[in-house]
Image 1 (spheres, rainbow, N blue to C red):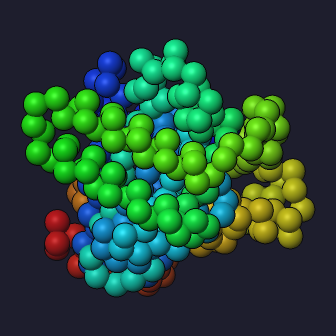
Image 2 (cartoon, rainbow, N blue to C red):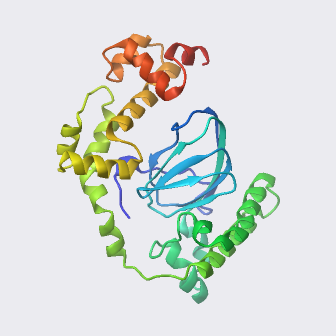
Image 3 (spheres, rainbow, N blue to C red):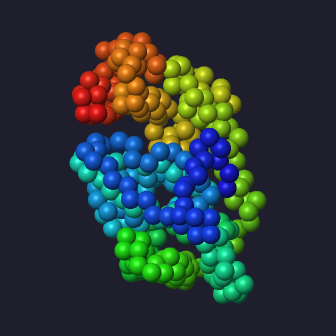
Length: 297
């Protein structure tokens, strides 16, 4: 699967010979629809374990609601983004690893038959396995064992982690027998995002101060406005205007916390000519005014 390089993330893993890492993600005092995971993709497999709060994750353009105890499986190359659906604290753990973690098992015919197809993206598990096969929830304790091993860091914990993950994938492959699918079919299914949305996403990321209408954005990707709006929301989980405003307010938050620019100057930097409108928009997306945000720094 291929997506815009500008959205590609390069997770910092433990070391080259051990391509695995755990990320503990905690968001304090979130508000509904707040971004908790920015739109990106990477070549690593990711397993998200919800711990606290309610969220909605969009994985390859499809939405998945998740609460405490839910597990989401993001395939290698999967475009994903997350938003809160609650007020208060929210937390989740991300298990991120590369398929090469199991390179020592590549000569194992059982591994090649049952596990490797999922690691190599020839087949995919459902994003939320337990929603389709409730018995899969019985395997989630293996993920908790992985987390506990990383936290304790006892001797040879890396070996335990690798073995628990491999066992998890093996049991999951039993629950979801492989359906063969060629890499070409898999790639072509997502070509619209790679070819049409790359210049637009790059422009939005690098030009937060410039205004762009829906019509102009549609021309950017060579779609009519109606089809563009429908496709864009499917991709990001937000309307185009909402997504642009959200990106601008994230940039504004960064400028508020990392620079000495005045609020009026920051307003202009993110494409808002009216500082009063900027304050209203910032409070709508961040839950507090720019002045309050700066005081909390």
